Amino acid sequence: MRRTLVVAMMVALAAQTSAAWAFADDEARTAILELREQLKASQRAQVDLMTQVEALRSENQRMIGQMQELTRQVETMDKRLIEVEPARVELNGRVISVKPAERRDFENAIALFQKRDFSGCLKALNTFKKTWPKSAYMADVDYWRASSYYSLNDFKSTITVTNNLYRVYPRSAKAPEALLMKSSAELSEGQIDEAKKTLNTLIKRYPKSDSVKTAKDRLAQIQKLG
Image (cartoon, rainbow, N blue to C red; front, side, top):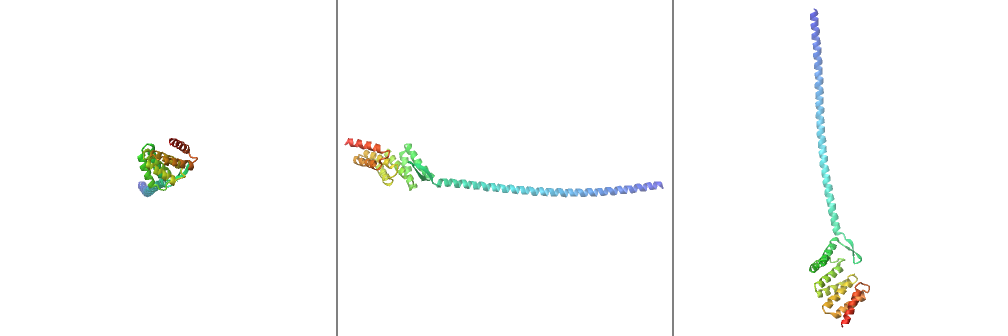
């Protein structure tokens, strides 16, 4: 009978142990399922975050592109304004207002004269007169045109241009020099009386100019000759 009791106790203990194990398996299974759900949720959150980061990166690149384009447009407008807006420069002791392209065309033409390319200078200055008909450089343009003609021994054209300069721009600083050049061209053409008249005009109209002394000396030499 004791043996039967022992056997019964062992069977009961085994049953309890089996039930405990079965309960432990259920808890572990539930914990694993919860962990799997947490992992899936974490993975979804990570994917969503990466998607948001990529969207922000794309938006940032788009904004950078817009800023670069706006910067390019501003720089282009600045360059256009520089080419269009007049600048103040000094010419013959006075300040004038000229456009950058206008100034560049004038200086390029004078550079040709300095290189003794008198024909090229004339061509450039004639083009300048057509391109910039109201330029503040115009008296100087005619002066250098006359100088180019004189350097090419075209004295008749020199006389024509200097006459125009004196008539249209009598207050220009180049007017006295133009009259002096005109007298030289007239002497070269054998127009002695005209040269004397031109020199007297210079002395009378521009008594304080730097050209007066040369005019007086030249007039004295002409009078000695006859």
